[in-house]
Length: 256
Image (cartoon, rainbow, N blue to C red; front, top):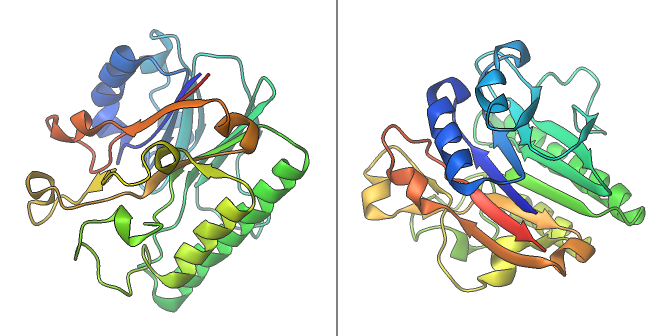
């Protein structure tokens, strides 16, 4: 199985990019974040002729997640269990594909909204850990992939790319990411490339892309039975060099 995650930073602006990438790479599942449109406005027909069925959790102008699949699936969750029922932010989609559960996430950034915004990020990560723990307790083959908005270690960002107090590198954010690993999940990219500098995001500002000043904030975490079958995991840098790109690139994972 080839599974990928990509923060496209507006599907309406990047529809052509996604179509081209699907044609070139042909993943079985592509998880999208920050689609920035309501569910009904998602261009599902644009991908249907490529053999992909869409599942979408949209939100007007902000956030939004989706999955494009060419394998049979059912949507099992459209919001992260454990969050308040009135939480309206579209950040989570969960699918059942065969015996596998696939969660696509757009984790809060945490830098906006002051202390409350950062507290929301941490609460979201706590709820994600609880969901992962519940699925792992059932011995469910599990993938959690998406934009985590966390650089897990100092090796996951260019030196000086972020100030020490930034929510993406804050000790509390990193501690909650480690909690996911301690549950038994494997960071697919780091499992195969433990020491390589690999970025998934380059800011539009300050010539970050030509200077290669980047962050690794888009991740795929695998349960033990899937991690044992992991054969490849790598960000696709090529997409950042395309015309009018997203500031993120796809991360592709291959499982035997």
